[in-house]
Image (cartoon, rainbow, N blue to C red; front, side, top):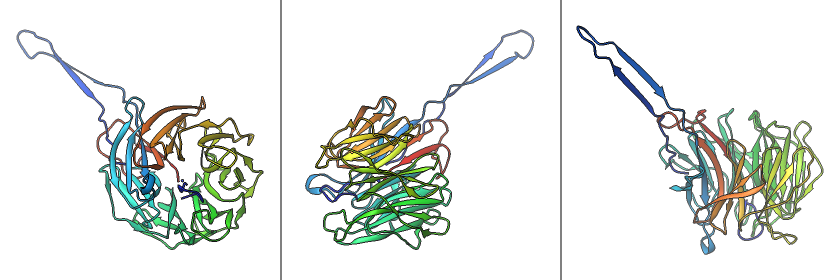
Length: 390
């Protein structure tokens, strides 16, 4: 949940496994007076390319916005695009993260996280967390998920709830700034950065936030907050772990943070109200919603090396969230008002294919499933690669 405007904006089904094809030919030579020699030739076809799936939460549309309760598996493999499976989860599914064969959906209104087994397309028992879970990130090194507790539509939350992924139990919450929204974890899995957005949701009272709180995940302790722009929402970290990018919704800017010093650098202006961000191909890719200065509905590339914003890429109306394909070459965005998800070719900075996803597409995670082997992969298996957003 991310916006002070309406609608509120922020950061799956069973995945099929295709078996590798194997064929053999037995050639017999006919001869007289004894057993014929046999030659067996076995050949294995090259493995099929991996299938790619987006797992999209549905928030509802129109008068039903905020009453959605489904997670949808969407095949986004080129040439095979289409909605596959719809899985019941909690109300107002605000964020989704995928780890191996499991998805974890943060349900804002229900105050829970729903674990979903992607091999069977079934939801497990909801895990109670803090009020208004708004984003979720996973540390595979620690076998834990971390959920921001934004609060309700009338009161602010101020914590992050860890979940033990072995037991699927919530642990003691970690205090952070008011109204926490996005969260991202460093590549080593040992530090998180949380956007303290403050009162940006309609109905909440209190000041708009302007800090990011680092958390030492080994100790579970929050560290000194870092001052950024107003209304920070989305958070992403470069693959080398060196820089954090934070979207400042109310300041119409993005703030880089140097991870080694935890110091904020100069803010980078963007044309709309930025709510989400991912990093790939040398750029931070920022989702831009409408503002008083811009009609929004853009994805804006920002060079990681120069901190310069490039030309906005216009997408469909109601853009909410963004996720990368595992190869880092394509981004997919959810467009709530248009009822679809759209792809962006990161090399050409152009919009590609779109897939209709009725019901208010909101949060998104993208995975690739290897096409060789049979049966489902377990959580953390190398067979499935994932990217997530909140």
